[in-house]
Amino acid sequence: MARKTKAEAAATREALLDAAEEVFLEKGVARTSLEQIARHAGMTRGAVYWHFRNKCDLFQAMLNRVRMPFQELVEEIGDPSLAERPLEAIRLACLSGFERLERPRYRRVHAILIHHCEVFGDIDPLAMQNEMAEESCGALRDYLQSATRLGQIREDLPPELAAKLLQSMLSGLFHDWLRNHEQFSIVEQGMVLVETQLRLFAPSA
Image (cartoon, rainbow, N blue to C red; front, top):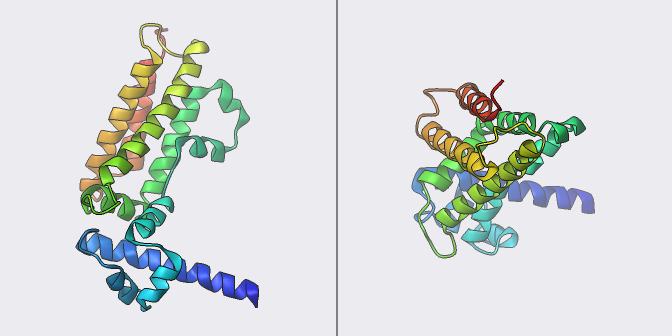
C-alpha cells in the first residue's frame, strides 16, 4: 500500500508539472497563478503546495525534467572509445540533444523559458539561460581541449575560441528553431551545421 501511495504522489506531481507547462505556455509565467495550475490539473491549490514550495520551485522542477547537461548526453551514449574521439563525442551528444528537443515536452518547456517568462520573484529566466549556456560551453571546451592534445584541432585555433564558436552557433540555431520549429528539423539542419563546424576545426590534410 505504501508503494502505491508513493506512486500516486509521483503521478500527482507529474500531472501538476504537465498542467504548469500548458498554462505557462498559454498565459506566460508571471500571469499564471498556482491556483490556475491546480484548477487546470483538476486539483486543489493545497495539492500544489504539498509538492512545491512556491511557483519558483515548481518552475525549476519543470525545467529539471528537460535539462540536458552535455556530459550526461555523452555518458548516455555509452561508448568508452569516445575518450579518444572527442570530436565524435561532441557530434553524437549534439545529435542526442537535437533529438530530445524535437519531443513536444522539451520544445514546450524551452519555449516557455525563452519566450513566455519574465523576471518574476525568484524566477530569473536570463540567469537560468546563462547557467545552461555556461555549462554547455564549459563542457565543449573540455572536449575541444582533449581534441587539441590529441592533434585533432588545427593549431591556430585555441580550444576556448572553438568552444565559443560552437556554442554561439548552437545558441543561434536553438533560438531560430524555437521561433520556427515547424519550418525546419533541428535534427537535420543542426547536424549539417555541427558537422560542418567540426570539419572546419580539423587540421588541414
